[in-house]
Amino acid sequence: MPFVNIKLVEGVFTTQQKHEMAAAISDVMVRFEGSEAFREVVWVLIEELHKDGWHIGGRPSWPASLMETSRTASHCGGDRGNPTTHEALAEGMP
Image 1 (cartoon, helix red, strand yellow):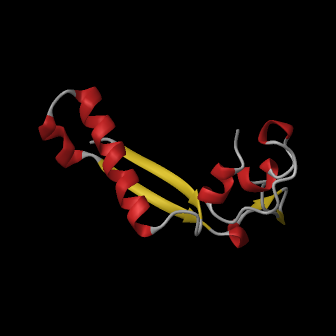
Image 2 (tube, helix red, strand yellow):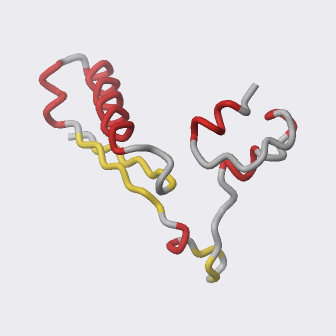
Image 3 (tube, rainbow, N blue to C red):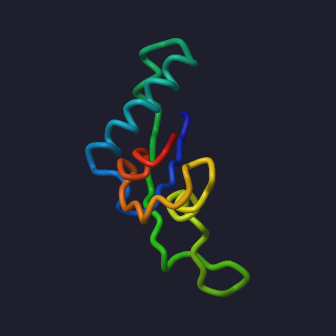
């Protein structure tokens, strides 16, 4: 039985988007295995990560996220403000 564990930043994706993501991942696993019957044994777990759960070097810390990094990255066109959703982030991408 394949077990796929996806970790996302809390609040970025809607419940519906997470359901669609799990279905798409299951589709990929079935495609590679080759049998539709395989779908019934594909497990997908989506976990959302909270900022207060991260510790780096023994101290509370939150790693830079794609949204934070992209605000000033030159490949994203420089300062794009402070995107709060993946749609807003995508709008700032080239």
